Image (cartoon, rainbow, N blue to C red; front, side, top):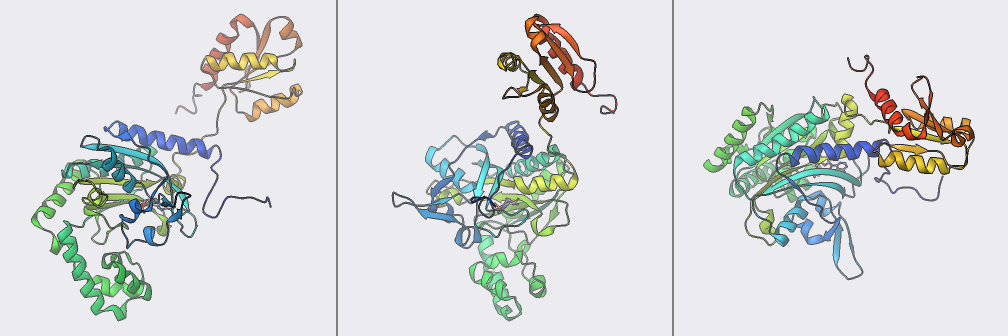
Length: 427
Ligand code: AMP
């Protein structure tokens, strides 16, 4: 075993998976930029206070943070998520409202690694700061939905809830505390610990011991203010108007403490339910204020790249495509011809590669095969002497000899012919 390997929960992403990751982010960027969102690239590391505002009662903050004191005695942390950073950036730069931002990149949480759960994992997400309009909630939820559709996913489901206004949420939390405390002897030990930290999170429990106590728990619907009911009704009407199917899930409270009003979660259609949450979000009127800014409503979501790609694997969509080279130059005369020709082909917009170390013809042909090239260009001693080149379609077509002055045109034509779909593929 080599002396150094990636740390637990951290991975190298090699080709062709790395190209798939890049395409994933590109499809996301295309989806949300078409809706007026602009990219923000926050730093990986921030003052720990930025993240602790997210919720002292969450595991993300209490147990999973990668934090340390830096050489300047600052207590910093690798970001466990990016919503807090986006809000901190808003307070710092004050872009004009409404501010519609998207992001992508890695986050860090010290979790127990397993399939679909890593210590470094990538997310893409959007945030809208400014409007309280339920139309924004609908836009945000719909963009996530449309993104999954663009990837080809058909089994994603959407769950929706509202936590009401802060005062509603508070009264509801208090009612839950009383209910669960009165029957705490019936709850699992771990659930009792959750109850002490945050009664709302008890609703997340899937433990069978807790089922009865949960069933008789107070319902959030009875705590909505008229404004909260109206907001929720409009979100639902918007989703209905867009034909986006969802199920109402009264127990969907989401992990982070700052959610108000709308919360939602997307789940993959696979059986492995522990890891099938692809992403989620909600409204968080209050976070910007907590970070020292003026009261500014916000709504957004974060989607896990790793889990969404696992869902793609399960549904057999958005697969990794092996990289394809247009033209591979085989030069048995020393290599300088290959240096010049690959440069010319690349300048003409072709993906061009070659072999190195002056290998034999046979070994260079093998390399051409491995590269999945559509066309090989062969320069041997005769071709060099006569200012010619052999063009060989790699799909089994007849090879032919051309002069150097017509080589580029011939290669472009041959690449085009090789890349047009065969009748079978185009069916
Ligand atoms: P959260 O920020 O906790 O709401 O998570 C949003 C999404 O990020 C989840 O639904 C997952 O898809 C993804 N995610 C969160 N934590 C991890 C992790 N440790 N490893 C992989 N993906 C994660």
